[in-house]
Length: 204
Image 1 (cartoon, helix red, strand yellow):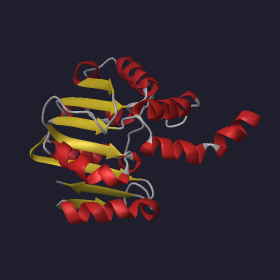
Image 2 (tube, helix red, strand yellow):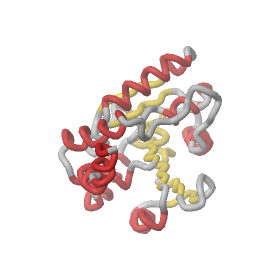
Image 3 (cartoon, helix red, strand yellow):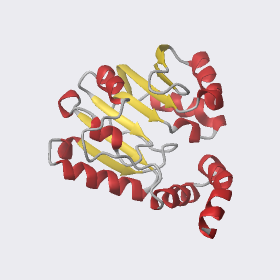
Image 4 (cartoon, one colour):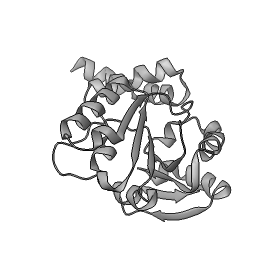
């Protein structure tokens, strides 16, 4: 109980560390939360991540990059017939290990299509062009003064018709990101269909 109380009191510190800390400090903060079972998803059954509809619609059978992939829940809910490759990147080795284990447990074509990489999304560089670059509840963990330059760099890794897909779980808290994107990018679609307080944006 004492440790739980201390853990809750340290939440603001962990939040600052995730945005402003070094790669090593950010990794430690995320690993601590994964060890406690936070950010884990039920992927054992047929439950489908609702973001998958948009990823499948916009990737056109091509290549998907998931930045901040957590335990790979989006990858595991994609129809393996509707994409060519999926690359998931997360700073937490614990999250990535869980993603790999869950993917192998499916015993289907995902094992050859899906790659999970331990890396900092602020410095990761894709090895080839992507049709969809997804930030599912991860973009707001990027230092806000670097978001525009980060997206501009990743934009160079999009195919000619490629798009970004960004989901934010709390638009009242993170609405400034939507404003930033509107001034810099071409918004293709926006919806609150995933949850009433969130926002999903498709842009290029």
